[in-house]
Length: 187
Image (cartoon, rainbow, N blue to C red; front, top):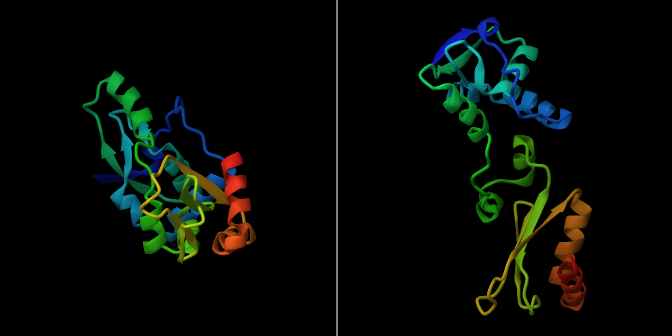
């Protein structure tokens, strides 16, 4: 890794990734709040100083007035490898483990990192009435009892705390479980 003047770095004009205005604002805030991340995840440039990894960060760094930025020089890649890198660097191969996120992070903390909504995961099966409900740091986790075979996972995202609280309350109230079960199975 090395630092070079930002003016020497060229944006990739053929970058296939886009960023929404909202996501771009989150990126700007993320860099403002945690600039040390740039050292841990520098831009990747080719031998012509063109970005092959980090185009959106470069745009944000320019807007934020950075004069020099950390880069990794990937000048030994073929044109085909560079083309592939641009796509593979942005692929979401993994999935979030919402159980760990719910225990180790608060929802406000996750939202400040860029998460948008609260997730509810549960098993879809015949008997939701026996499910245990737990609220840990504002992330609702519903685990089926061992007797239920988990057929699939369903994710429900809440735009507001009110909707989240209503579903949580309904799951805790045995009289409302059947209504929630019907609603969720109809999705």
